[in-house]
Length: 150
Image (cartoon, rainbow, N blue to C red; front, side, top):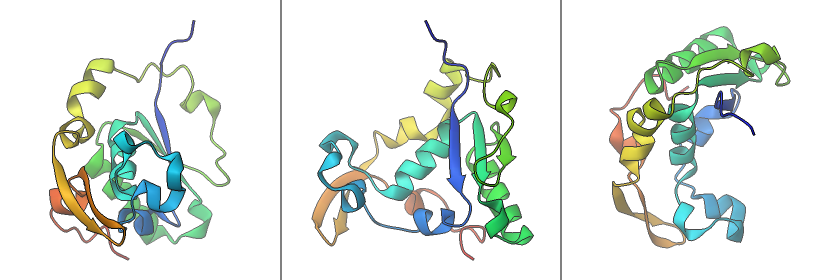
């Protein structure tokens, strides 16, 4: 048997803002591989993964300047203040930072993150492919922030 010990989300530092600032749905990028029950925007998926994770790895830190890295770290702290944030290049991290950490807490995960709330906040979204029901976009849930734009 395996024990769920840590949930890890790897973020592309170079593209994070482009993925947060898109109205694209999963099916727009990945086609018919997306089941209708999981039809949401790329930005919704990204925020859900950030909020749920115990460990966040900011990858490709060699491709951005230090001020941008600081803005990304601040954004991640706003979305998930309890997650451990690691920096990496080429996804290289010390395995001891992500295996056998004991950080996962099911009760916290099930009740504390915005992903659970957003499942119940469906709204009609207008897209280039017609109107679709999807979770309320993160851009409507959070006040505009200077940390989302470069």
